[in-house]
Image 1 (cartoon, one colour):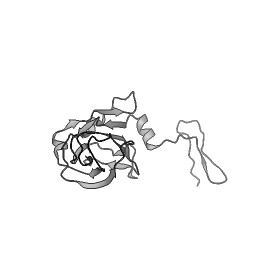
Image 2 (tube, rainbow, N blue to C red):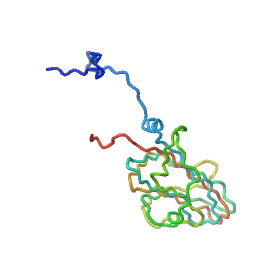
Image 3 (tube, one colour):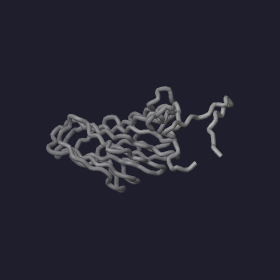
Image 4 (cartoon, rainbow, N blue to C red):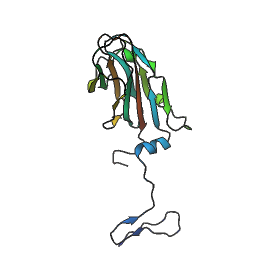
Length: 204
């Protein structure tokens, strides 16, 4: 016996299947981040300017996610200025699931955590610990996840090869080591991401 798909509103309309066995629909296709933005669940995060005054390693950004739905990071943008007195490469390292260090215990808030829906009152800060660092701040555990060096500070450094997924309890940190001899270099870490509210497990 054939199964028909009928309009649940009671009009009696039925779905059409053509000779190539294709179901005819009129649908709207959106990316995950577009859908999240429309739901008020997409965010721009920025540390604001962090000034590093030595050539030593400082951890300048930390985010621990505590929400129920996954937080998807589309890109991490790191914007260093030219170094005063520094020579050679700067080092940038991203850490997976750090839990200890002074960047965490000092708990300085990001300069901005902004919703990409300008009419939404949703605030990622209610579902995450979001801290920026200062000169000398540390991360003392976690796993090195990504690493790069730069000696040209005219363009931002972008980590966007693929999405990074933070589930409840996951964290991410960014540390920077300015060039040797540095006495002043500013750094900004920006994170673009969204909360994925759709079912992603394949289960109802």
